[in-house]
Image 1 (cartoon, rainbow, N blue to C red):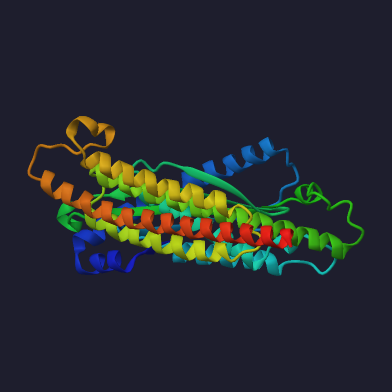
Image 2 (tube, rainbow, N blue to C red; image 1 turned 90 degrees about the vertical axis):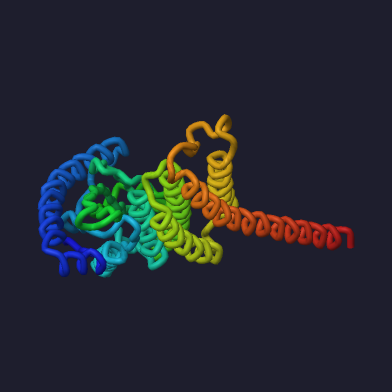
Length: 354
């Protein structure tokens, strides 16, 4: 399914040149998608072989979604909606007799995987690839149920037709697989006495697995946010596009982190926050290096020559304030947590002494 963003659709509506350019671009992307699907299926086969799983079945054909939009836009709602719908269909197919693969799917697991899908879309934006590079990810949503998604992007640059904005097309191919072998290999499953106990084991394992999947999605999105800054520094992303995308990514990160904080099964929150806060600190260091003396700039330096130098430095100053604010918030949160832990430890000590 091909989907154009409203802004790209308006450009095509008001310009014959844009309409023609987009039609040609769409045809090329259609051809790329066919090659993409072949590589996708071959990669799945090789992945299962490495995992030692031989009984995999695929309840649905490969799904495909293409999104054409300006580079400064980030909207994967159409993609996440069809992926979520497919997962719910898989859940609804559960039979009444005994634990099946579908019982491993929970609303939490579905939400967590949707985060992964969004983070993959974000990674495409931050990479700025023009070569149609192929990325692939397998996610174990729960015992016996695997999700696969791959993504590739292609860009269209035509200043006469679209101005300074680059038009990008992201192609996503996805599918799901089931494996009874994987269920049987789940710790405690074969030793369970009855079907009800087996279902509880599957559901519990899925809660833990989905929390980990959600955490991985948060980290991947944070990495993608850092990629935006790299592109701003090297000049491949405009300041306006950077700010729009950075706002979008940060909004999603805050929403996801709030949800993750409230999950009992999220056992790796400290590790997750350590990584994401570390990414913010790294971003800030890159900006300060780029703004520093020429002799200290290294690979993140800004060329001193040319009329755009002053403007570029202003852009980096703005981004520094933006990232510094995130670092300050994280530092304060860590300090509050430290005080809270110290207070709890003191209370436990008082109780023990009593």
